[in-house]
Image (tube, rainbow, N blue to C red):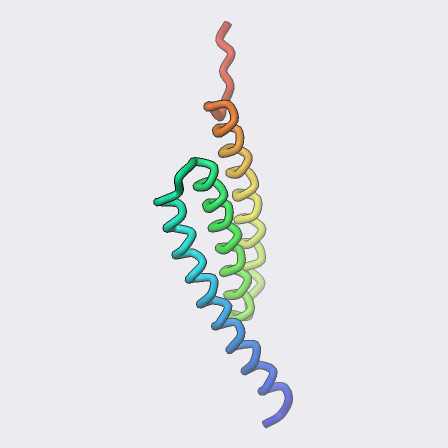
Amino acid sequence: MNLLSATESIVQISTIICLAAISISLILLLCRIIIGPTNADRAVALDSVGMNMMGLAALMAVLIPTTKLNDVILLIGILLFIGTLAVAKYLEKGVIIDRKLD
C-alpha cells in the first residue's frame, strides 16, 4: 500500500464521518427551529442550518472532484447573509421593508 492510496482512504473516511456529524447537527437544528422558545432562537438555528449546508457542499466537493460546488458554497453564503439581515431587521422593527406613505 503506497502513501497516496493511504492518504485517499483517510480523507474519504474522515469526510464520511464529517458528513454524518453534520447530518446529526442538521437534525438537532431542525428540532430547535420547530421547538425554539423565541424567534431569535429560531433565527440563530436557521443561520446555523445555512452554515451546515455550506459545510455539506464543501464536503461533497471533496468527495466529488469538481469545482462547480465552490460556486454553490459562495451562493449559499451570500443568500445566508441577506436572509440573516432580513430576519434581524424583522425581529427589531417588525417589518422588513419600510414604506413611508405620508
